[in-house]
Image 1 (cartoon, rainbow, N blue to C red):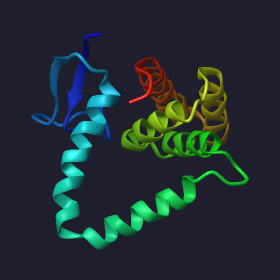
Image 2 (cartoon, one colour; image 1 turned 90 degrees about the vertical axis):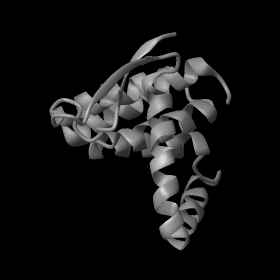
Image 3 (cartoon, helix red, strand yellow; image 1 turned 135 degrees about the horizontal axis):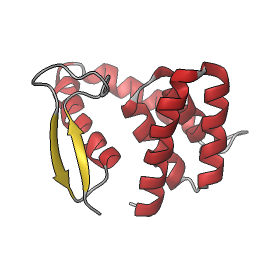
Image 4 (cartoon, rainbow, N blue to C red; image 1 turned 90 degrees about the horizontal axis):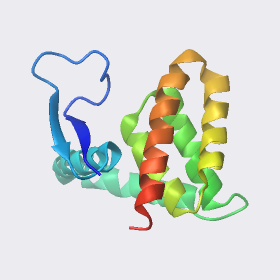
Length: 143
C-alpha cells in the first residue's frame, strides 16, 4: 500500500517549521517509516552514550516482560501513555509491540479510550494516530 510519508518533524506535524517537513510516497506505512527514521537517529546518539541506551533497553525489557500483567497489556499501556505524551515514536513502537503481542484492534481502541479519558482533547489527536499505527502494524503481520 502506498502512503504519504512525513519525515524529519515528528513532534508537531500540525505546525511544521519551514524546511523541516518532507512528503514523499513510500510502499510502507507512515509508522513503519517513522520507526526506521528514528532508528537511524538513535544509532548516532547511541554511539556517544552507549551506557545510557544499554540501561534504557534493559529497563524496557524488564518492564515489558511477561509477569502478573501480560506483555500485550503492558504494550497497550505504553501505547496509551505515548498518546498522553504526544510521542509519535512511542506510539509507533508500542503499537507495533501490542500488535506483535496479539492485541486486537478493539483492545487497542479501548486502551486509547482510557488515554482520552485521562488526557482529554489532545489525546483524541494522538489517540487517532495510535489507532492508525496499531492497525498498520497489525495488518502487516508478524515481522
